[in-house]
Length: 462
Image 1: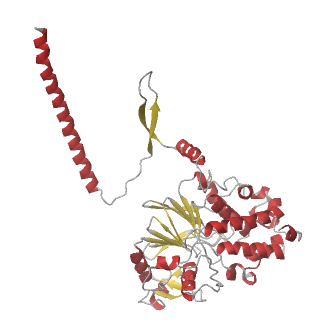
Image 2: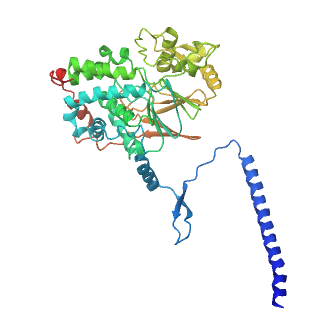
Image 3: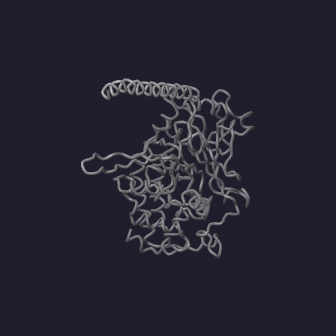
């Protein structure tokens, strides 16, 4: 009797199991159809990343049992970033090669507390560090193309012009934990020297960051990274780069440091592209020099070492035109659009003179369509708001110094964060004071204190 009962219960149990499996299949089918419908309705849209991570652990089993995997979904925060950094620090990489180099450490210490390093800034050691830094960064830049391609998130900075104070603001508020621990890339659009009184400090810091983080920090070339401009002492006087080099280190060593820096500038890229969508350059878009190539290809064809102003003998006219347009051109004003811009090409003569050009709305449209880009981000022009928009909100001008350009005491220093589909403007308020750059006697007094010349016996040592 009990055997018959067990035989009768077995088919019923199997039927129940089959029914449960069928119900699960129907449920999974419905979920799949719903997912496919949601995917088709959101096609072409970027999804926001969820700030969660799946943490997987292997748990040992008991005696004779196999280990099992346990997965937990955790929200990521600052601790996750630090943990990731610790793991990545143990991996071999190019970026870690100079992370603890004494040269880079000395310069970063100087940047963090400049008023406490006045002796170093006037020392033989600082001069030797600059020479060595230039030699090392030159080799890194020679491996970069004339157009660098990077992914967002990316911070875009305009002209700095020797303004250590505004650069400190960005450091204190954007990469407070250091660039290596800050998500994203850093793209600087040129004009690091002249006009401001801390050109050597700004140059040393940016080159040190390039040395430490060659795949995270990118330095484009501006028109002030040419010898004709940063050697124009008659025009800029004590605010010229060559004057500050000579005044700090003496005529001989000062000239050699100025030339070493310019040899690094000769190797700076001319443009950058973020997310294959945003064209970044110091001045503006170049005119086409060939029907058989795109403008990006034209820039890539510029020699690896280019003097531009003045050019080297190996630079032909076409390459010099492309490079000059990248570092010198401006968006056309409304008046220029009406009177001086060629309606067929969209380009015209710039008010700057000297062969510089301006680009109008047609030139912008043609360039963006040819390359498949959406925006142009450039520097080169001072704006009191730090960031300006023109040409139908397709051209952004970024200016990252609030001083030395006759924009008034309320001028802002700005930068732009490109983060996927978002463009975020970050400005420095004039009320913001940096605790390290502002000693009790005031910033301008600090700037002028350490500009005394270094003794001539450095010639033998260097």
